[in-house]
Image (cartoon, rainbow, N blue to C red):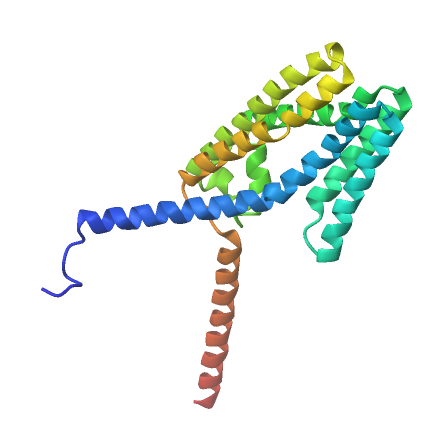
Length: 254
């Protein structure tokens, strides 16, 4: 009996399964880092608000705090542009800070610097929940292109759709819990206390949501690479046409 004829042992089967799971986890982790900006994206999210509350805690100067936060956001974008990195996360931070500066300047209330971001968080939480209830979980719409599966998970990969639904519910509930803490504090706490609590809640809920997304997707069926399928179909069509042309040429020769 040759090695090819030998039955596969349970140990070999387990090893391959473990390797497949490890590969799935690695691919999922890389995709999540790409989609959500990784460590650098988190830093760019936190730094402007941290600078604002630090300066305001020291001198209570709304204008200086707001301008400093906006300037550092612009610097982060400039650094990415110089290095030719992806700027979508930095740009979103600039827009968020800019809206916060406008709100705070208009009302004269430093806490309003954080209001646009809070409203965005609430809207995003509702979007995660509503789209999932509608059968098109938002996290799937976001990550589908990253995994090169687009919307194939909706009809062709039910296990993956279920994982996206779980992840979207997790994001929605986590963000709602964050809003449940922040909105009462917006009314009751002073600006300094509120600012520090908000900065402290920037990263932990985000990391929890990303971790749960990673867990759900790592255990889900692998994505269907629709781009590879389209390329294969195009190549098959080219081969068919080439074979037909060759056949026509041989027919003419006879």
